Length: 102
Image (tube, rainbow, N blue to C red; front, side, top):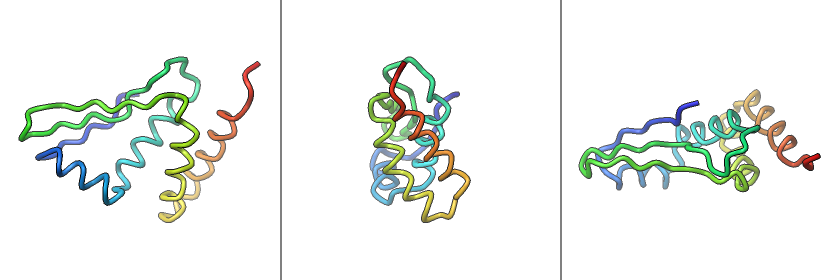
């Protein structure tokens, strides 16, 4: 799955989205994790942020070792938004990731 692309005027604008805990960022991060549960890669590419003023693209990755914590932190935003089907998927993914490797 390709990472979610965000196009912003400046890095400050993107930082504002992060500070306001914009749900589209949370959705993109969770979707990337859910689509990469069985990956063997150490990192997955979750977001690409194109900053127009800086004429730069920032690629944001996430280490596999942080999948569980990231899902847990984002679960609350899905609960607040009453996205219960997604909450169920997130909880199942946490269960899969918590299973010991055989």
